[in-house]
Length: 119
Length: 109
Image (tube, rainbow over all chains, first blue to last red):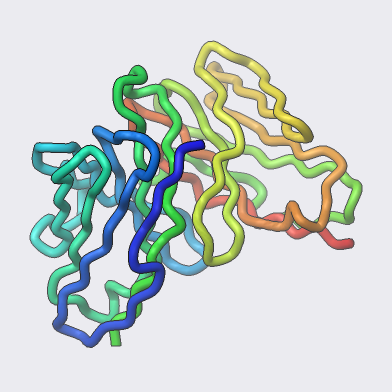
């Protein structure tokens, strides 16, 4: 089956530092990856759509300078939380949609998530 | 804003009983997907139902879709304690999944 990994699974950092989270599709190529955040007991909120080789598309209210997304290859997207603050503490989840299989209708495969804690 | 809205928010049943969760959405969709999430973990894809389908089965899962009412339901039959998790519907609008608030299911042994 299609497997998506995230690294790290858990990170604790000091306020003001930047944190990079990686999302990899392990056994398939993904033209499109998505980044979500989830607060405790809440739903997943789509932050941005990451397209290989082009700029990410951010959802309304998401600061693109704060959450930098790079999708440099068909198997890797990265999310960098810049100048992190305690309110950025959350569960960040990525998903990947396989390339060349019809695009919009297809299943997304989710990573296991990264728990970020900013002190 | 949330595309999928779910009902109930929490459901507690005994093992062996059936669990039904409902989802409503607002705009036209390509398909609708259901996921489960154990506490603090990633999402597991359960089932996808296309906009031209009305019902779909997978093991103990049965999903219905009514596009005229913009609603879907997930039925888990003969529930087990291991089914305890949060369940989310995710209408697919133009390739983007917009998740509902979820239903927290607790199955007591």
